[in-house]
Amino acid sequence: MADNSTSINAASAAPAASEEKMEQIIVKINGRDQLGLNASIMGILAKYDAQILDIGQADIHSSLSLGIMIRIGENHSGQVMKELLFKATELGVNIGFEPIDDDRYEAWVNRQGKNRYILTIIARSLSAAQIAAASSVATAHNLNIDSIRRLTGRMSLRNPSHSERSCIEFSLRGTPEGAETLQADLMEMSSRMGVDFSFQKDGMFRRMRRLICFDMDSTLIQTECIDELATRAGVGEEVKKITESAMRGEIDFKESFRRRVALLKGLDSSVMQEIAETMPITEGVDRLMDILKKCGYKIAILSGGFTYFGEYLQRKYGIDYVFANELEIGEDGRLTGKYVGDIVDGKRKAELLKLIAQMEKVNLAQTIAVGDGANDLPMLSTAGLGIAFHAKPRVVANAKQSINTIGIDGVLYFLGFKDSYLGELGKMQ
Image 1 (cartoon, helix red, strand yellow):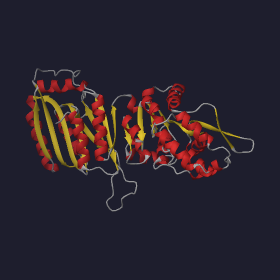
Image 2 (cartoon, rainbow, N blue to C red; image 1 turned 90 degrees about the vertical axis):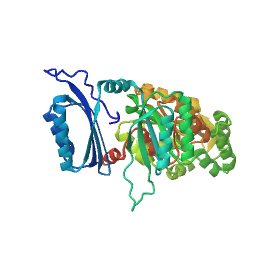
Image 3 (cartoon, helix red, strand yellow; image 1 turned 120 degrees about the horizontal axis):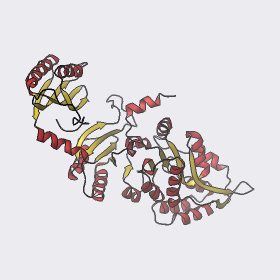
Image 4 (tube, rainbow, N blue to C red; image 1 turned 60 degrees about the vertical axis):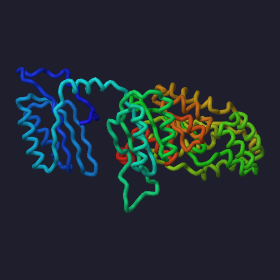
């Protein structure tokens, strides 16, 4: 049996009263899954006081694969295998046995100190070629695949969903050489095969994320609010060019912001309500926010956009913090072409993420940041988990995780959620 499940340390087990020689045997069972199979097998092992050193089970479409490593006195091993063989025949499953000598067992025990990682891959649907490509990258960097599990729900052939997605998670063990080379290889695989990926160390903090910070424009919403304002002010094309240049990192964000806001001078501020009420929400936002709130995450918007729109989303989704830019409005109710306070740029976003984490008493390793533009890179690199979402090429190239093929609720899979868990959470009031 491959050493791909959690081991139960036998070092502290009390020795047998007699000096009977002990041996290790792997029991391998394959066949149709059925109620009571595990209990029947364990009942036989219990009768002979077998010690369980390791156990792992997988079930794919009612097809069972069960492996058990036992330690048992050699005087009883023959009888145990005989009874197990009879029970397997009765149940209609295949069974096999493999002896493991002490040296081989100890070598397996000594490998448990190696680092563990989680590689998650996502696409609308996953093919054998895509999974093979991801597996090949892991193998090339000396990472052994301990287990694979599907996070997404079962796909209907007769009634496919328009928002279909497929996600699997590899549990890897080993010590890769050259983190930058590994990241580059994953990036190349992702681009070539059309999949999204996340590669994370499987440690305590990965399972205890507590704060998530989002960019707003082109992340939570599928537009740039300043472009919407500019269109109504009749300067849409001019502002859009500056916006695109800034998001690509070609010009300083603060300078581009001042130039764009100045072009809005004279626009009636009442149009902001109309824009807010018709903003196109990104696919998956409703589901993502609902799950995050039910799981107790603190949520923040850190945006180079405008406070008015961030606060609209805050009321809609119960978001905890909003930091964005404030447009100055004159006594006549029109925009002055100026702003109030400091500009929220990339550097400020990273500072705010740290500040909120400090206020909430959250370790930075427990934080998540999601964004699409060059001004999001500082907070993506500061957070414990930085995710580029439908991002510009420069951002994707510098982020360690990215989502480009599905909606923003794909973030949940990077956090280890399964659709079966999410279905249960969705029913909660």
